[in-house]
Length: 213
Ligand code: CTP
Image 1: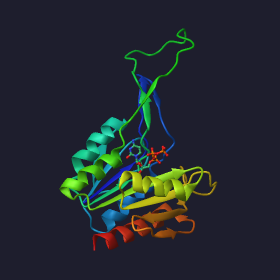
Image 2 (image 1 turned 30 degrees about the vertical axis):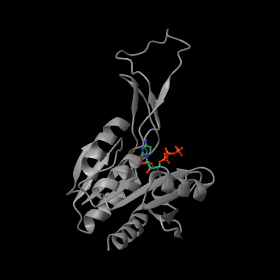
Image 3 (image 1 turned 60 degrees about the vertical axis):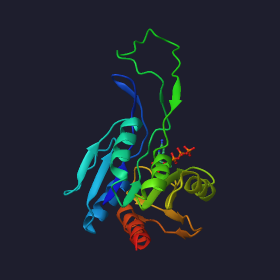
Image 4 (image 1 turned 90 degrees about the horizontal axis):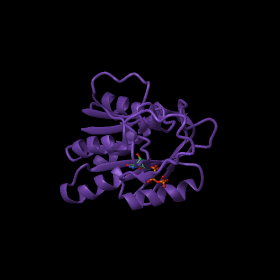
């Protein structure tokens, strides 16, 4: 049983505006498709995305980081694998206005507060329940790629982290290709060449299958 998160979260400012990010959801949806093709029961927890939902999985639509947190915590403890490809907002507006903010309210300052780190919570719960056996995080970085990714792997208690450089013009955000490096908890580093997100998903699932034994 595999839980995949994908797409970006949206944090409302008022009924028509939100703090968003530019994640397309492509890598997460590709992972869900490959996990399905390999016979897994798949739950896809998806933030904003325009992609077609693969046939045969259970879809959970979410908007905010808090909704994603709730959905992931409900599913992860009953699953073997969590693939956390979603781009979760790190900050949300402290208060969301129930009415559309008018132009006249000039000079407003948006106060932000941090969201919870979902992966860290899942890893903490795994210490008791033992599940999910494999937790895969993603690190989209614009500098010090491998150092930052290794830091996240250790800080969040992950099994594997998929690092990609978001400043590369031909890979990463919103395009069909990706160039990633897989770092594991044992210190292993596997750098993959430029390839489609579907092929990246195959490599990640190969590693996951090996980790599951
Ligand atoms: N993530 C999460 N909960 C959050 C933010 C991120 O579980 N509130 C997950 C992402 O889905 C991803 C991994 O953590 O798999 C790394 O996300 P990233 O935004 O790169 O890491 P942060 O911990 O937010 O660190 P920073 O923004 O400082 O780089």
